[in-house]
Figure 1 (tube, rainbow, N blue to C red):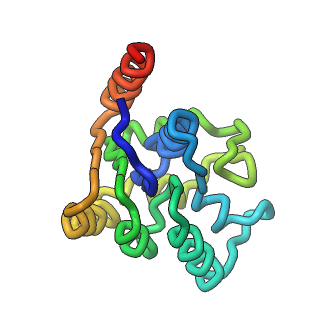
Figure 2: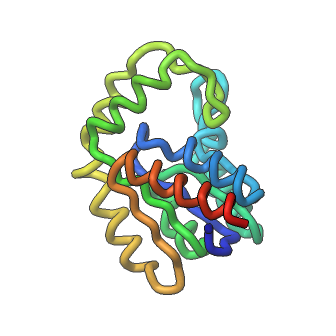
Length: 173
């Protein structure tokens, strides 16, 4: 059974399954879910300003109950400072690339548009994620480990096993 939690981050490389995990968590916990991609991106594929994004993230984290889905490394530290739980989907690059390919052409509640075509710049960002993003994420997780529950998944099978245990715990009630 899930331990009590009020302020949750779901982080990891694009394509790792963060949004699916966050939706499942919302459905089980009843916590409100906020997608950083929905905040940052406009439907016309432009972005809001960094200042507006930061203000909206600050306002979200000031609340007492939430799930926030997304990395946005630039704003990770203040979110870590406010959360009580982190679910880190640390999946291999190949799994993340496959995740992005599998969702292409499908509407998603976490994005304001449908990704129709491969975006080579975005795919390169995913390929570079282990070298360019992961070390800082790990450093911040270590820095904020005290007083927080941090759950790391290294594969889709580990995520599925987590949900299977939650399902069994729920049916035992």
